[in-house]
Amino acid sequence: MDQGFTLWFTGLSGAGKSTLANLAAAEFRSRGHRVEILDGDEVRTNLSKGLGFSKEDRDTNIRRIGYVCRLLSRNGVIAISAAISPYRAIRDEVRGAHDRFFEVFMKCPLETLVERDVKGLYKKALKGEIPSFTGVSDPYEEPLSPELVIDSSIEQPDLSLRKLLANLEERNYIYRNGAGRGVGR
Image (tube, rainbow, N blue to C red; front, side):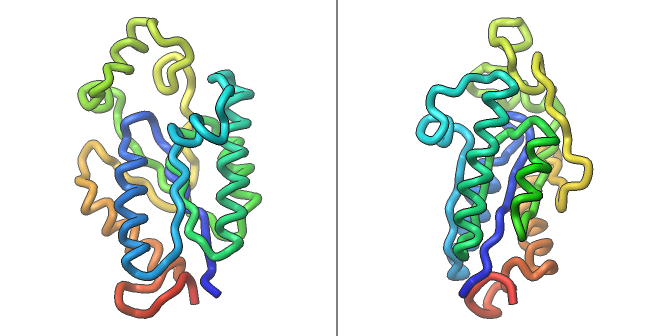
């Protein structure tokens, strides 16, 4: 049976978590892996409806995502989380509950995120119109030792994907392309 794992993307809104998660999922599927993505926005709409943005509610949301990822990964699925997950302690708690966990920090300076922001959320947050906005009026605690750091302000998504795949292959989380079906060895 394939060995699953959790691939956890963390970073500020607009840093490229969902973009890289979707690219990775497509590549994993092309190699015969079973994959599920838990996108932060979709989870809030379905699994965590009714939660707000207090620290406690954010922690509950991340614990729920982590729990679902753990269930999927222990059943041979590559579970991908693409959620801001702003607090280090909760990310570390989730990591501790998994046998195989790979954290990717999507790093991007605030100035670049403001430039990219098609919805205008950062501009509103910087004006004080959106309370508790992560990275502006609410903290984001960068991971201390993620398995991979991607700086999306200087790196195109295709290069980021190649770096991610190389790291996962090197650690035997996925087979090299064309080397066989399944996760791990």
